[in-house]
Image 1 (tube, rainbow, N blue to C red):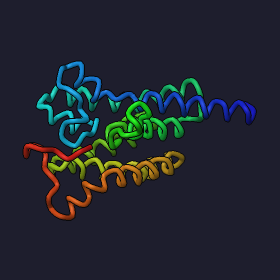
Image 2: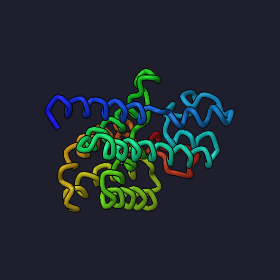
Image 3: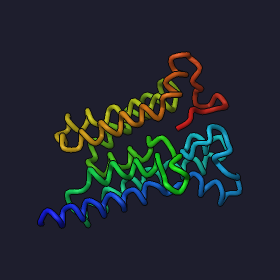
Length: 204
């Protein structure tokens, strides 16, 4: 493959991944279910935690799975159609979820979509991500803390499992996810971050 072809492939894979990542499943599902505009509920976030504030656990679960699936699909599509662009696709799928052009770049916080790209990049990374996310969530009952810890675990798991080529992009995404959770971090430090089941979840 010549340099020009590689650049074209990288560009197409990035755009395709961004387009997939930017599909706002939380917003779509809540509107289809007649729950109104998700952006006017709770934190205004389009992620699964805010969908849960509608009181519909099924919609929240559906949002979580679809946000995860779109990340995985972006990476798998890149692997089969534009080999070698998986890391770029992973990055832009999460960027698309967090900053969708259709919603004036105000999207979710990327935790579920990052799990999807982690699973598709290499299952050991995805497994570590899931175990940390669920483990911290069950131990603390704080959604944001579980998500942030999982994001930080991903690049470490990549190195440990022999997939160091993916560690840099996962590290950049982890830092971005921490930045998107800066309000949650402030509440965690103040001891005011809501716990799952307390009547108001943390924005995700």
